[in-house]
Image (cartoon, rainbow, N blue to C red):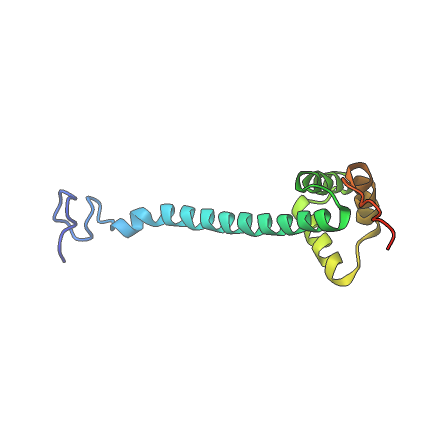
Length: 125
């Protein structure tokens, strides 16, 4: 077995106590894998929330900032995590079902924030 370069020892296993660098790196590897998992979840969560904000903009005729405020208020008033509220709203867009408490909070919040602009009637044809 060849000694670990730069370890200052010729002991088998490479390290001064017979530990290999992979054993020493294992806790850091686990920590980095956990961080990658959290980052992946954050990216997914962000995408879900952005989609729900887009639905608020399109259906509620609010600005994106107001759409964020609507989601936040619904989350706070229903005691449901914001990402879960966003998921419920996206599902509502697909199947038309929204829990009654979420629907009521959504209608209240949209009533406070929107619509930001009302279409003006055009000239008669």
